[in-house]
Length: 317
Image: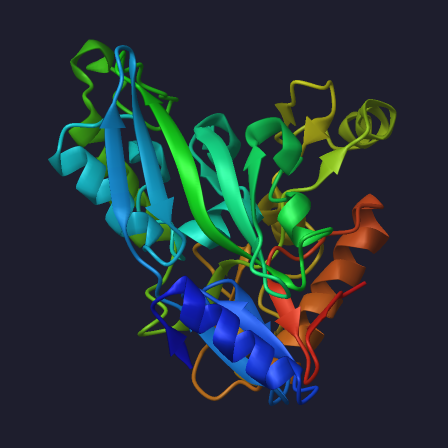
């Protein structure tokens, strides 16, 4: 069921909740795996609109939650507002960007978010939550926990500095570092994402199935001592982030598949439906990967994808 206005969202929610019929709100549905038929109403958010205010030193964007994230990035580039290009081609809608705290190539949503507007579906009250109140962390936010049910994100505020500073790494120009501009970064990232991530319209997938684990320094020190070739990244809080794709690739299996559910060989974080895989095949494969990685590295991989049962979201292990 598609909704294009906030009032329609409230009306539908109240109508079916009065009948004790569960409801779930999705944007593009690019980060979910339905394990069985959902015994409720799936509400598709298509509440759209963008307002831009120019300040002295920055741009202030107010975006309604049903806008597509990738469309927003390309739109800002067209009107010469620079700073979102590192998040090019990330699927999903604006609301999901806040829930997931999306991130890629050195930039996370929390670094550009000014506020998030949330509505209570019970009484229609709108709450504006400033950045610090959102409890953003790696692929997580308060919207996955406290405001997970009975609330909906209706808009986000994004603040973009007029002083553009490129966020680059070794994947970009090596010899032409001083010639980089937002359009080049955007084009490079689009090419990289298309190369690494299969088109879901051609090969079923939900992007990265697992999160990159973030490990306590003491535990990380022991693991890195045993596996000296293991890549890692130092977080601001001193914790260590380890690429989940590397852990999967080095867990004593490579081509395991269950039915048509398989690991995508170009990017081991992605699980694919080769043709006729059932959702339970994907789930069994994910659990098998978890067990292999846990047995070898003592690290439990946590899914980035939301798992939906007949009654709502569930957790893996």
